[in-house]
Image (cartoon, rainbow, N blue to C red; front, side, top):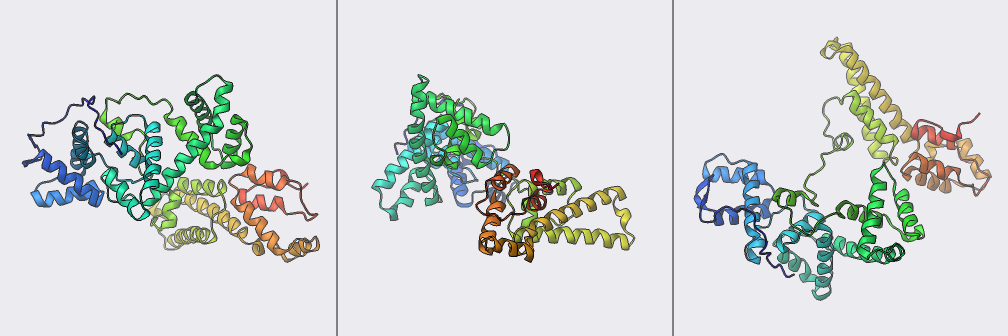
Length: 424
């Protein structure tokens, strides 16, 4: 990796000869070295702040530490390559895109898509010439880190392969529209991103849309291809010129914000100790109805929560403590919990073929040459389909046997409606 400095950068930097206002006895170079090295060890500004507060007997906040790291990165932009590697702005959330952003700081690059592609190609070249047992060290040394795993290498190699594949597929499209390859990639990616942003699109819909645009067989398009184009469309308008705002450069293209766990995630992790609100419980119901059927163990955990809290409300009433909450609010929460309980019980009934079909149902199927293993595989496939439309499409397909699968009952259990299979 070349890691050349870009002499055109002209951000206003603090004078390195002056001490930091929070550390009057410490030179800025020493402070930057200290904080950036500490971040590589612990990856958390709050932890660094606690250590510095104890050492200097002063109140240092996480915000101060973050600001020091930003100062160091801005200052490093006009310094030697080794300083750029050392003071480059590091991200707490270590993802491939964040590693790419760090590569951009070190290399002085300003177009996220081009930088990611170039980085993937450099990694590929490094893999080809570096023994496997030294590859991890080589990549970490190049980026000044000590915790980039080989999983990131695999992902970047896959990104490069996907890029080459899509460029090959897009070229006829671009030629037909008298576009350059870059223009064609931008046009296709923008269309795919717009389509995916218009509403919830499952994987099959995304693949179908990409294949239609490129006039290709759906079988050669993958979810990774669609995801690549969505990201490409997101950054297709990037300029090669540097954004004048350092903060924008930190945020743009990076996975800066860690998404907080959803109510469902919290529940499955056991993090919900109090009653959820009726609105949160209603959202859980929507989540269950609009996603693939969850694992039996997860459903049982949710059911346990619902039953426990329904029981808790009943016990509170029996103890005469119903006035601890407005009664109407308590009624709404109980009704929401009972609704959640019914949905989970319905979903549990379709996780296992023996609980979904009666003995008579299975005997009828066997009479048509459909054994229990075939039925179980059919049920498992339906449970993993992501949407109501996908399930209806599958159940509406011409049957290979004369056995009539109870489509109305399945849809009623999973989605709360028999859909188009309602019997007269």
